[in-house]
Length: 464
Image 1 (cartoon, rainbow, N blue to C red):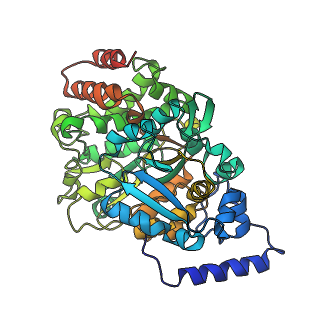
Image 2 (image 1 turned 60 degrees about the vertical axis):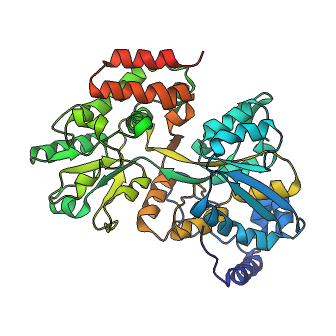
């Protein structure tokens, strides 16, 4: 979210007036198709666009629901809560609807109790779709295909976002939520100044990535910085790598089956993905400290040797949050940069592994519909994007909203992705995704068990 500029409302009204005058001569601009670069400056929002999203949103913008209250709850606390509140102030000023968001650090542990007890908020912000799916299976979630124009959803979200929001309820398949703030994981970080000085080139294919890895090793350096230690969560960084490889070596259908448990870990598809990972991880010439150091190196410390002089390792795959662990004073685009983790098999395009928040609707009133419809628009995230800390998945968002070049670059990678899927381990049952998958892969990396044993352990842990 961003702090509002004092003249925003006046400027917005002037823009809307200008667009209305031009409406007879100029058709509303449609978001570019997925194969085209994202727009850097989308057209100003008009009343006709609000009507296209949903009738209640257009009515809300006309003041019909002034004085009403819509409650929300989720995991946003502290600075995130402030930014959310700031981001909806413009909508509240235009419509007179008061959005009251209650954040809790215990959200994941309490949301089921609140839903089952009948005291859940109108709209709930889920930090991952697995939690939402639990409520969908109970029949507690409203189908957004009956709230938001389905044609608008198809226009404003890539199909992968819609796929990840489509869930099975007792009454059939529903659109369970709309995606809001997201982040990308399919990134490889490197020390820019030294990388450029060495004459290395950013790879665009997996073969080029492996050629770069060999080149760095041939130069007498260690290519990769890798560590998966994370206390009770040790191993999650390994699962991310496997998920990345799955997206690049098999179909989205197989990825979804794997996450759901119908495609076994002990399968050719999963074994193939792991093989791509271990060709890097298990080569001691490729990994700083060698294979043995991976399970004991804290994931946040893993990239730090990149910043030694000279670098002790050169490449680190991790999501955009990892910069919080970089040494203080390092500047994006100067001291470090990143590139998209390249595709492996061209037939699977350029997938991106993502995480993010998805909003679901639990109570059906006109003002709640209006807020849900608004949240399906990039406009709802514009303030947060400009303030930093949020990336928009909406096709009608603009890259010009991003003030930080690094975040803008991540946003561009996500907007230009051919497909997206959520972190697989977060979607699996807890006993697997936050249990055996982490532990067995850690044991495999450490050498205490072989791959056959690891895969059989994970499959056996799947809830019956």
